[in-house]
Image (cartoon, rainbow, N blue to C red; front, side):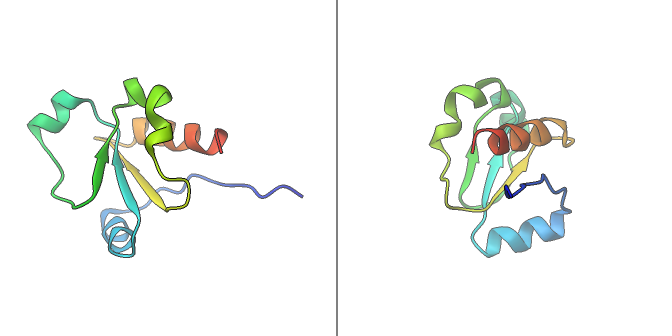
Length: 86
């Protein structure tokens, strides 16, 4: 039987806990949005959703990740894309 990966929505408190435990925070907002309001988190990676399909290989395959955006829609799409691409 094939293992199924699911996208899990988590709150900011859980996000902070996961990052402290080594998860990588991946911000999929566009550069202009990040310039207006950047997250104050060490080891954050910004790959805008508009570039995600071309750049997702830059992300490590052996590390937990938390995808973030402004409201959750783009991060959900990015997470689903990653699951579908191994």
